Image 1 (tube, rainbow, N blue to C red):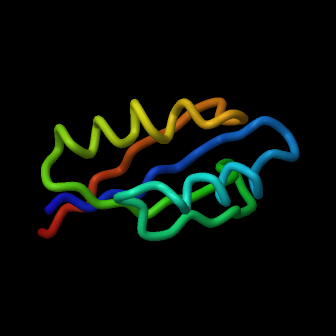
Image 2 (tube, rainbow, N blue to C red):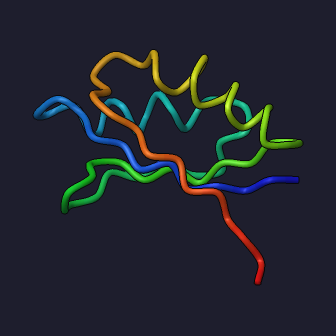
Image 3 (cartoon, one colour):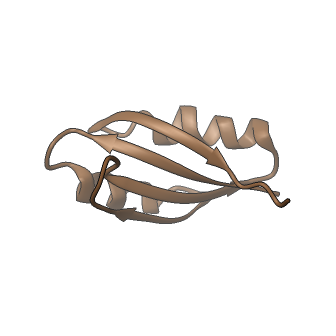
Length: 77
């Protein structure tokens, strides 16, 4: 299982809507609107890195209002 945080920048005023929509996606644990350089932070998990990439590219990035994403896989050191 691969876990990751996806940091999202949105169009102005769209953070709450984006977080609400992303929360409903399979593989998403949480999606919260935040302040700072990113507008939404998502905790997600998938079976492997390819499945994680598929989740981000085909389900998260197409959400209306998203400008940019940064995917940060969790590593256990």
